[in-house]
Image (cartoon, rainbow, N blue to C red; front, top):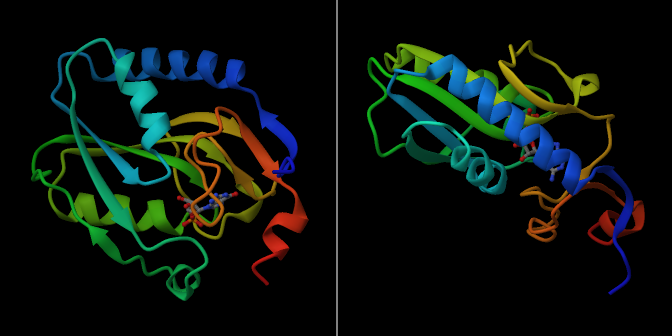
Length: 181
Ligand code: 5GP
């Protein structure tokens, strides 16, 4: 297969270093508390796995799946929950772990809904941020890397379910996504 990557934006080494730093920041923030780490499927799985291994105390882990990128629901700001949490969030400290924040609509919705369900606190941790595309304000509490407005894959992020297992974050060549047009 020809290399689908136009450019590596964040290397494996850079990610590993930053994930370790973020785990330390999160450990310092939540030490002594019961933390529920909520991963957003599927994109956040690799990031979340590497992150939680380096948090310095036991955490609870749960997952949600929401309607995916490119669906018309995104433009209206409505996000459909495909898989909900197993745990109740009432009175709990919640850290949402996401792969990338683009328009901000997904995270804005999730933060709102978990707050309404009575979570004690809801904070956001994302590996990547594309601030150029933001349509709603989202306060990011723990951020890995800011990236330019390019469609990226790797480290959990896919294109048509492929490339999630790449150990770096790379911009996809235009000719790869033009195939689906
Ligand atoms: P938002 O609601 O912030 O616009 O969308 C966030 C979601 O869009 C992410 O969880 C991810 O699924 C998808 N997304 C946004 N930008 C990219 C990108 O560059 N690459 C991939 N693979 N997914 C993206």
